[in-house]
Image (tube, rainbow, N blue to C red; front, side, top):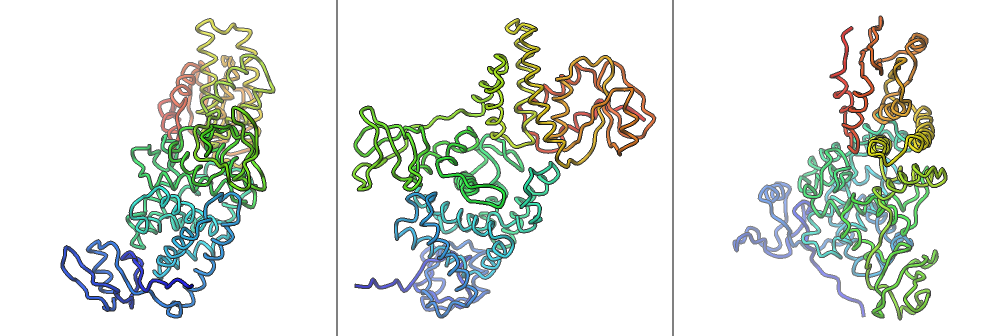
Length: 535
């Protein structure tokens, strides 16, 4: 027997349209403001917005009343929901008909707002991936928020749909670039968060405009644009950060293969303190796909280790209990109830492994852990988070007589090999401003110079190191904005470039100042000013 469809629906004041009919009286503080059957006008809707009215019960429109634009966009979204429900990375999400109906009705209520609909379609017109990513994040984030029993979802889930809208003002050629972004390009791309905030505010979405501004922040302060920390970020935004990252990792892009769900979760755990760990654990349980090596509780009451994921049926992995190893049965007589724990090497632990193998001289393990550690940080942070801290650790071990000079030199030579490979990678990329490093004959530490070069590269400079005797040839071949002399004695240049001079101890102090820091702007240029010499 067919179930009668409700003849009414609850909408936020931002999603009702001129011409909607009130299904029930609109009451505020026990006073009737508008009677049922009243037809809303644009003027009245604006009045209600200013009075911060929440939800309104209106008569459900027949589909014939919905214009073709609305029908087109909802048809596309409903089709996407159907496709997504079949993707393995969705796990057990979208398997409940009530969830599917919930997400469809919420999307439809938002799309009744012509301006919101127009901006959502801007994503589709701009780039197919951006549109699919928006629908993906909206679906997963909204249903996860529902699973978490967050209140007032309809008032903030529009932010999960339009949070990336600022990206439409970024060059598509830049976004689809195969090679890593240069620092200048990275700054251009990062502007989308502030542009998005302004656009959402212009749509009357001040309540969720910070979703755009903060979705690339991280709870440990390593994100952008303001390096906010957990206490500055609402749980709704922390949820968005997790889902946005998961979606980006598991969706195929032009120059990036998709990760499996379990690979994505392993990668996110490896980032350590960037995400709310409790929320991430619950998101894994919400998806229902558990990373290899995680400890889970079964419905039998036993605990088990996930040994391997089933590529065709990821909800049924191979697990090992205290008594046996088995693939979870297809009749679902035994399933995973919850995640007990999951541990991977964090960035801090990878750093320890890398340092230990540098000291031991194990080239193979050094390369392995270096490659893994790089994945934990943005390119701009490789110098401050990897090279400088390792260098200072080795120096500290020497001062405390823990590391003999011969072992130190061996470790430094291995570190220099890593630096050489990384500097070559940087040289192959386009960088903003060339800098000439002039080393005097009193400069005795090549590792220190290479680490400084890596810092310059990660902060948007292209560093060319030359001796005092050969710098003129470089100046004849290319324009230099800055000349930095490293050594005991300053050198007077006849050219008009900005000229800086640091001794080796001063360079050591500079590197120590930035060790372990996340640099977000022109901190290096500002710090160098104290060493500037007059023309």
